[in-house]
Image (cartoon, rainbow, N blue to C red):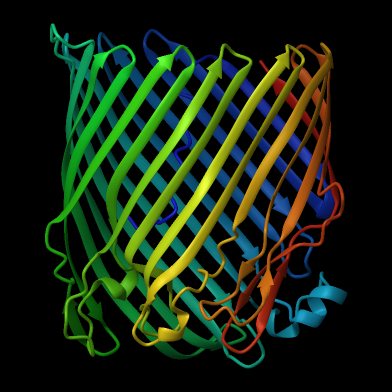
Length: 520
């Protein structure tokens, strides 16, 4: 709902009979243990995961202790599958803080005394119920319900010029999605699928902040309680007049509701009147030759503010409109059996009023960049020239600019959007010279980015990082490996500008890890 650059969907195992365990140890006192197991009998499947990580980390005052637990239970009866997923994570971590320009060059492990009591606890829970059913030969139903919980309690001090803060975030997010898929047989079409669906997302969030002195509360600066509901529906068709042409039109509408309470001030505010948000989409794919697909996509979606920015909070007296994101992509995909996959695409996305990060001040409002435009080219290659060699790589070039800035900052017209590198790339090589041996070399990198919308603080963030791994199978079920991260000992970091100075968070240098993995 608040993303502007896309999202990632990670699919994990359901079912199977297996035991998969891995133990990693190495640099900075790091110990990482994971074990997952699957058991499937008579249509009932169970999957479990436990993971624990402990590290002293590269920086001083950066210890981390984290436990992850997960379970999946699914039951298949006839053409119906029902299931539940539960995940829980709890982490305790220290925070080393940021470094000045000078110390980022000369003393990268340092943590200033002002950060000595920084750190906190984060607990995350994810719970979901699933139903997938074939109602009839051409008709299928998919329904999911979920609840996510977040408890984030941290103490943080960015520099000696500002006091320490306690930041407490308590969130519950509930939702449900449902979709019907209909596959009618139409004599004059190669294939047809019609999908209708909808979803509702409900949030009950609290954001509290205090000024503190070494974790002792001195005064409260924020006590916000806000609810947000986004609900909508869509209709989509996948039309295939022939086996070489696929046309996918779709239309979605959304509505937003909610209310906001500032408990410190004793005031309330309604949600901005965003109205009914209309979002058409269209995709066309043509396959003139086997393994060659040319495609074009057009779509519109939206973004609203995070936190208090979604509400009509004084002194604002006029409802804000949603930021409408409109984009297109055109490209070609090439596949040749299992040995070649390649893609090239050109794309552009505009936002009518891009909303940036949530502000750190007590209001919790967000920055408004104004109208923006992002355009670029994506290249992707997966190549397996022989059975024992796999080569992959990707490259993206993007230019992200402020087209029409916020009226308060007219000088930013034409500036680059901060913290967006123009070039991002990754690649790797996997070689299996013998049945028991696996060699891997991979890396990723990016070009530099601007630190602020004014483009006055220089460009930072450029890096190229290489990693290598050697693995050997002691037995068919036991593999040992050694991994060298940041092979060339690249000095790189995340950098941001707080309005008065540049602040640096250095990344790890060259580091060695060993692992043993058991699979049954």
